[in-house]
Image (cartoon, rainbow, N blue to C red):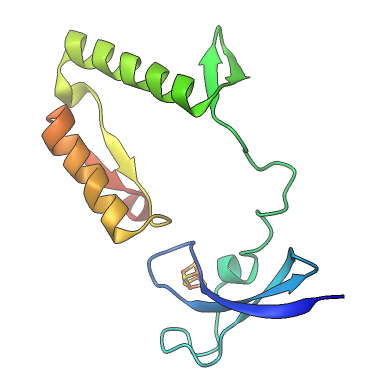
Length: 135
Ligand code: SF4
């Protein structure tokens, strides 16, 4: 049996608490707080304590889904992006750039959030940008 602790950072919000993942035979089994981390000093909120659970969940989405005729259908990333791009162009062409908005997330990096707002403002032409922390 191969059992180890792997230090990492919680991905659930921008606080950036330090965690130790418990890994047994290559499978993520649990999450512990990292006592030496300067941000959380051995503490985690309830989301952090359960950080590992979604990784092995049977409900986890493993590929894009595109809604067609009221039903979600599995699609490749290329098809899903093409579908979203075409629909965005269609809606923006018909109703203008302020008819759409971009919602970003605390679960992505500051750099990714920056790129998302840049995409909204420079590519789409809207200031309709918001963040899940405000929702
Ligand atoms: S443990 Fe809680 S407070 Fe810390 S980063 Fe994760 S979600 Fe945020």
